[in-house]
Length: 270
Picture 1 (tube, rainbow, N blue to C red):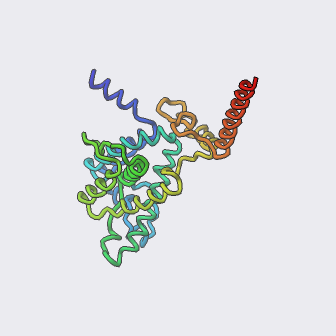
Picture 2 (cartoon, rainbow, N blue to C red):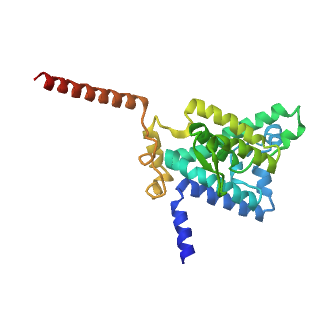
Picture 3 (cartoon, one colour):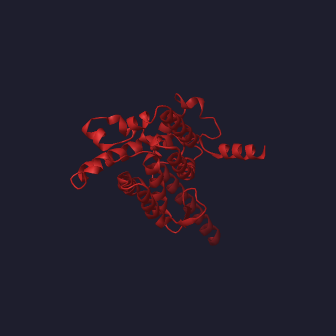
């Protein structure tokens, strides 16, 4: 019973969006095994098929396919450590938007990158992009750029390395396992753009709290947004506050300080 209680406690600590990723990936892996890798061959992003044969659906959900059980376990364990923190920081709805739309952009960059490199290597167009390695790498890279002096646990392994060295170590190991991982180069390009233009997370939707709240109360999220593991926009660590609201709060604080200072001066004169 002790082991069951620990597993249950671990499951309860995982946020809703991350649970969705885990269960969806496991389901896709089971279906892929039952169909003798037919689904993997159909949905994995292969630039030659995506671009030259116009199989554009390959851009949509290749992240949910992992090829085999080994890749599934390692990929999800690495993703799990980053995803829970991201979902708690920005909310479940922005997290859902991120795992779908960010991956779509990365896959598009990846296909264009392979197309531009095909004159240097014909194999670039036949390379594959799959799994949550790309999004995991972006989460790690953003954290490394933000907290360079911090330490991060390396995937699911029991040792820590400085955040600023984490992306390089991750990139090197992934290319040692399977070379070349051009999709990680595409993810790196996207991460730097996202960091410069969106302060590290494009889907934070911080300027429109009403929009996020509307999605939370629409189908199908209205049936699950009351769950304890569902992170609403009112629960996130990063407040959903527009620039206008911040300026209003700033002026209010300045006014309070000025009023306080005036009262102190009046008391001194008396």
